[in-house]
Length: 176
Image (cartoon, rainbow, N blue to C red):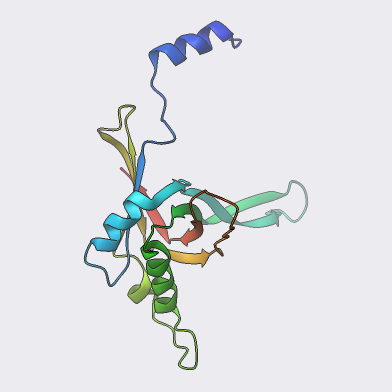
């Protein structure tokens, strides 16, 4: 059946679509008892939803000659990116840097923690309905931690807010 613009506009008028601005990101560092969790929720300006790919064997020929196959054998969660506003007290960047230093201490006594010690106690992305009142989808990220923290660009001639981009890695996720 061919696509028609009438059907498309009819669907737009009858169906609801997910709004880009109806979300929350809650992440709780391993040492935190809830304050940073609340802080990250209001400072997250943007975030990407989890994606997935597969690790595969490429150019597999089961019969020696003939057709070539790509055979997936493992799930590979894709990192997500978020942009956080930096508050006037710099709590955002301080908490993120504290977490980075917690994963691998820098300086003379450089030591690393085991993964179960530095991953988030809780990391959740919630998507809300069109009115922003009811959570319709929740992404729970397992063993989530900041993989990279970008530098923060400051400028005298700019009245905009300071922001920091963070790339998060996780081992799995659940959608509910």
